[in-house]
Length: 258
Image (cartoon, rainbow, N blue to C red):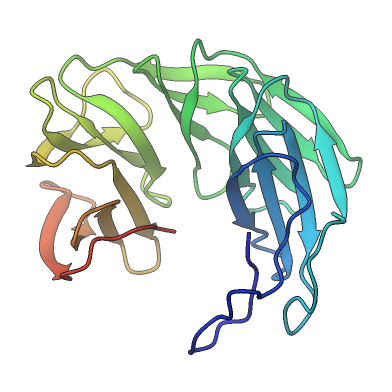
């Protein structure tokens, strides 16, 4: 993968790369506390921590600061703890979530409560709760410290794919597909997943919808890979909770989102 300074202009085809993994890289996440530290995970079953030099790479980087092995199958997802430095979560195709202490270089907790591949991870604002979606069609809210499942839902009308905690509102939002294969969003109370507060159909396109939430402005952005638009919503504390504002449109389909 590439790590380069933010600047306008064309990136040369031979620009130096981070290329130490032995398999395809499946996820990368910048450290929210140290701006030049990035984590990556791969089909080679490893999680690696890299330090990008100031000014960017001058040559290909093959040596990681730290290599972490704990999964028995490829690792697909990463998530940094939002309030504690050096705590990183990884989710593998072995259906396990590992909580890593990077200072010790080893996992301090394993969450082994999923029955299929984990599709998405999201911390709440202070990192005390973790929401997950899974290929078993279930939405879970976990307590990472103990590993306990606090809430679990499997909604017949909403097959969940992605989840995001909405800041400190004690609500979370999922994107998914209805029983009629239309794309949907659903809003949930984190303390009661028995039924969504809101279900709203979006459209009949086939690409996955990715939710992005800005806690400072209470804005939700919905974007899909292959779509030519990004929808904007405002999140409120009272009904109807979710207000559509407008959308950005482009003639070119989106190839990636982050």
